[in-house]
Every structure is written in C-alpha cells, then in structure tokens.
Length: 556
Image (cartoon, rainbow, N blue to C red; front, side, top):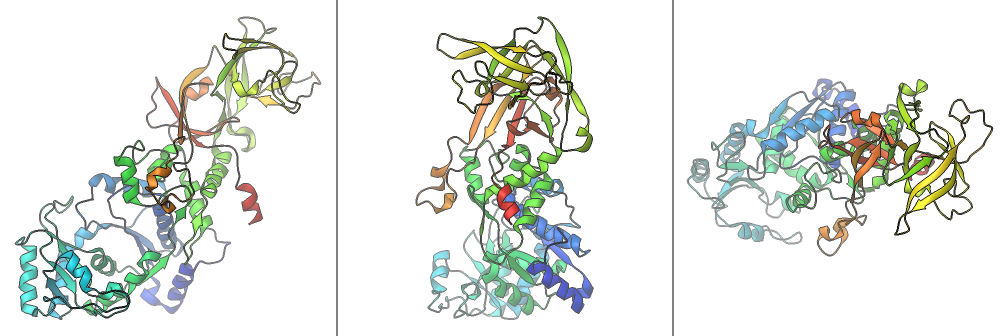
C-alpha cells in the first residue's frame, strides 16, 4: 500500500480505534473464503485489503475457510485458495476452518434456545418464506414458534442425532417478525444436510447457516475488524444481535464495495457454469478472471497488487474498466520482461547479396528499460529470415515505413535492407521477399550514413524454433454480460482465443522459464503456458503492447 495517498475509510477507523486503545491497539483481520470454487480478481481485492491492513498496522490476518456447505466444497478448492494467496505475496497467521468450531457453534445455538431466542421449525422453505411477510408488511408466526425451551432443546438434539431427513426441520432465531430488516425476521440458524463433509466426514448432519457461523467465528478468533462487501450491510444487525445475546467477544463488521469489472463476471457460480459447460478449458483458462487464470496468462503478483491499490477502497459500488488491469500488467512487464523476437505470421525474406552459407551472431539486450540491459543474448543471423507478413506490402502507401518494392528498413539488431523483388504463389500470395543489405549498416557499428524510418523484427530460418502461440481477447463481447435480457453466456466472445499452431521464435526462447514474462518485440507480452514441454513450446499472450490507459492515468 502506498504511504503517500490519503487514508481510506477503513484505515481511518483502525487508526481511531488504535488511538482510543480499543483491543489494546491490536489489529486482527481475516480472509474467509468458501472453498466452493477458485478465487477470482474480486477476491484478490479482498485479500490485498485484509492482509494489507494487517501488515500496515503491525497486526495479523487469519485465513478461515467458511466450510459450512459440504455439498459444494472440495479439498481441491482449499489447496487452490492457499496457493493463490501465497502467490499474491501474503502469508496468513493461522489457517482455520469454520468446521473447527462446529461443536462451539452448536453450544451457542443451545444457549440461544435456553434463553428463548431460538426455536425448531417444521415448516417448509416456502412456508417460512411466506411467513416472513414483505418489506412493507410484517411477518406472521408459524405454529412452531411457541414451542417450549425444553421441546426445542430435545428436537435440536434429535436433529443433530440424524433422526430427521433433509429439510424436515430448521433452527430459527426468535427475534422480531415485524422488524423492517427482513434479515431480522426469525432467520435460519441451522439446517439438516446428510452430506459427507471434506473435513469432518459424517460426524455432523446439521450445519450452521452463514449468518450464524460468520460473526461467531469472528468472535471466537477475536477478530477486531471484520471486513465484508456491501451486500452484507443488511446482515450487520443480525451479526451484532447474535454476538450481544451470546455475550461473546464483540467483533465488528465493516463493509466496502466489491470489485466489479467490465467484460467479465464476478460470480463463482457462473464461472463454474462456464467450466462445467466447457466454454473454457477450466478454472485456470487464461481468459478467466480467476487468479489461477491470470497467473497462467502471465499476470504477476505485483501487477495485481498494484491494480488493487489503484482502485482503492470505496463505500459505493462502481465498475472498473478492465483496461486499468491491463495497464498495470503492461507497466510491470515493461520493466521486467525480456525482449525476444517471434514471427507469428511468417513470410520468407532472402538477402540476395549476403553470402550463402554465411552466418554470424548478433547481440540483443534482455530489457533496454533496465540500466545495462539486464544482460543479453546471442541472436543468430543468416541469409534467409522469417519476417511478419504484415511488414511487406506490394503496393505500399506513402507513410508505410516497412518493406515494399524499393523501400528500406532496419532489421532489429542487424542491418538495413532494401526490397528489390518478391515471389508469389499460384494463388497470388507473397511467399518470398528479396532484399539486398548494406554491409556497413550493422546496428551499433553503422557507418553507412543511411537513414530509415522503420525497424522490423525477424528470425533466422535455419536457427528458428517453432511454438504454438495463443492470442487472447476478452471472454465476453459486451461490457456488462449480466445486463443482457437473455443468458449471460450469449455474450461470450467467439473470437476470445486465436491459436497460431506454428510460429517461429528465436532459439533463445527454447529455454523460456515458466512464470517469466517475455515481450515479443512489436507483438505484445507473452509467457510460457503450463502445458508447454521441451518438444512442444506453447506461449500465451498476456497483453498487447497498445496502452489505452496511459493517458487516463497521467490525467489522474
């Protein structure tokens, strides 16, 4: 977090609490994901916020898995969440699970029953919903609301013992059916689920609802600042009521605006739908907004942390342009990515006056943005080269500063060449461009006095390696996929993935490292895919070179 910017409202609250000596100046936050899917960029904002607050105020942050719904939760998701948090650069103080507290939570429920604040209800889900009334009309009690404490204790114990099928009974808080806050109208505390739990096995067949488990788990851990997203504002009254009735540690809930971003969806349920229906390869598909998908695409932890810092912490919902996220990774990779040459749509260039069989080794820096270039690499050069098809035009317009009949360009790190002729196939497609080179125009040693306006990249034909290259566009074709009248999947972008089966890359890229960023000169930023192997290189495009956000950031 930047120390130069003004404090956000959560930092103001914490600093005031510290000043007043609350919790003896202690700060303990938590990140409480449900292990029912992979984390996405929205969770990254919460991770950076909670762990960032803990770090800034010399406190700690717990990782607590909200594992109260065994139907949707898996160990795979638990491990992926831990991996994502570590990758982002954070380490939790304690790894905890709501299931650690099942016995304690059960005891809290018994306490509420004994105090007359909870009862077992046999009503169906529809009957309970109807009994709650409407925002303008009070609810009506079900026939079971008047059960005695002794009857409720016996029934709740029988629920735990597995004597009833799923849905037969629930435990509800007994609060106020006329409360203007619908969440206070006798909310559910426990439901019956005869389902195997990934940690507790078949020990339990009743599970606490989120609203009951959340605040009580915070209290058990003595969380000082429980940070949630805005949709939990209506839940805060119940959060405080339960803590007050149980007379336990008074954790406090604070709400901030969740991350909404253009051209994507921020719902694990809908992302799971894309995975299950095979619209994407999986949770880590590079088009997905998941942290694992962004990692596979080549995003760096620093770029995501910077993005989360830039968007700030607000109390009001807003939508962030995905272009800002792209700006952040572009800014980071410009400073760290090694420059390499790759030709994605090749035609052959033959230097007619370069001796046949002759080869030489040229030098290229790794990154000119780093003083000294951060080292460099050798680049083989020969008579025949691959160049991009778009770098040649048979009938070039006036301001086309690349190759065409009679036009000259510099080959990156090499010589100036002039186009003399070209060859077409039977379909009229250009297959070869014939050029002459100026022997004394070598980069770094140029004494030719020639001036050219264009520089193009290339790869030596005899030394080139091949690779599959994947070019990505946005997964959805509209800014807000959820705003459409029909199925959100109808807005999927059919051109979100372009696969180039055979691109030519300079030989140094054969040793590309997983997780490292590379700038393919003039083409964009790329990274080695996790499916890549020594005999089959696969590169994913992280982001293009075009930066539409730079001007906006400078304005700001």
